[in-house]
Image (cartoon, rainbow, N blue to C red; front, side):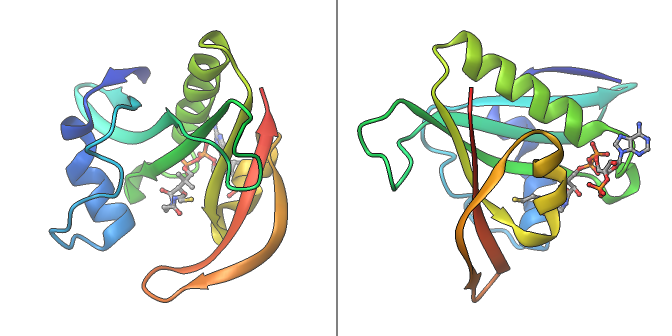
Length: 140
Ligand SMILES: CC(C)(COP(=O)(O)OP(=O)(O)OC[C@H]1O[C@@H](n2cnc3c(N)ncnc32)[C@H](O)[C@@H]1OP(=O)(O)O)[C@@H](O)C(=O)NCCC(=O)NCCS
């Protein structure tokens, strides 16, 4: 299993399957510059995620990275794929100047992010199409 930088197009289908139920929708933010990684095992893409420079809503003037698109193929969950993705994205953001790292986390993934050191901020809210979310963040 190894992690490497990829294009957004390389991971779009996995993200569509995992995060949009396979619906052929445009993925938010894919038109903007971002750093994407993929975890591969024997040429098969198992997981992905990305970060981009994007201020946190509560600190518009602070340097910040937004984490998006975290998705592991259901058949490869709980094997450390997501942890590998998140570590690579945090390392990239740190070496590119650091600052805040934040995301709108789906609440079922909250413990996963907490394990990487992220904290919740404010109250959870419901995205009518996707479900409950909470802001999570840390400083790099
Ligand atoms: C969130 C998500 C990306 C995590 O990916 P993952 O590859 O399963 O992540 P990991 O395997 O690194 O960690 C997940 C769990 O496996 C456990 N784990 C990590 N490494 C492990 C290993 N080597 N062996 C066994 N278990 C391990 C962790 O303890 C963790 O447990 P938790 O569920 O209590 O947090 C994945 O669950 C997913 O795609 N979910 C659906 C989409 C989603 O909600 N994305 C986040 C949007 S904000």
